[in-house]
Each structure stands twice: as structure tokens, then as C-alpha cells.
Length: 164
Image: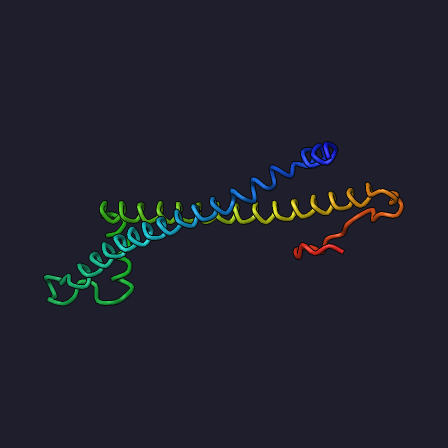
């Protein structure tokens, strides 16, 4: 029995079990963070869009004093003026920066979640391979079974976790 414990320690089975128990909690915590960051991004983007709409409203309402007609009569002129005013408006620039930072934080959190999923899946596969190795070793150590009578390798079908 002592030999079995040594083998399990050598294979690091406790580490795999610990990771498999801890990672779901980390994944759930990351999902909660993503929900909060998604809400913060939506609010920041809404603030930016409202400021842009305010700028566009001012452009549409502007009248040329010499002609008494809209100052920016076609869409191309309105869009050019909108871009010029957004670039010059400090409040808009601040809102755009906040929206971009919120989006970047959200993307980073989503990348971290994917990394946690990948780590969990990899740990599952490695733990499964270790369990196959332990089973092979146990079969090889049974009384009356020689190494030549036990399977030498286990082949796993990629992505399925199935052994044959």
C-alpha cells in the first residue's frame, strides 16, 4: 500500500484533484466579473453614444445665418463636421476613452475566462491519462500477471478522452 501512495505522489494526482476542484470556482468568479464588466462597458458606450448624438443634433440644428438654410445640407458635410467636433470636444473624448477602456477590460476578462476553461480541460485530460497509467501499472503488478501480459500503452482519441 505504501508503494501505491508513493506512485500516486510521484504522478502528482493530488495536484490534479486540487486543480479540478478549484478551477470551477475560479471560472464562476470570472463569469461574475465579466457580467459586471459587460454592464460597465454598456454604460460607458451609452454615455459616448449620447454625447455623439448631442453633437450630431447640434450639427443638424445649425442654420447658416447668410442663407437661412441648414449649415450642413448634405450627409457628407454633416459627417465631416461630426468627426471634427468629436475630435475637438473634450467631454466626448473622455467618454470615448472610458468606453474603450471598459471594452478592453471586458475583452481581457473574457480572455482570462477562456484560459481558465483551457486549463480545466487540459487538467481533465492529464488526470485521465494519469488514471490510465495507474490502471496499467496496477494490472502489471497483479500476482500472476507479467509485464508482457499487460498492455504496454494506452492510445487516446484526440478531443474525446476515450481510450482504446
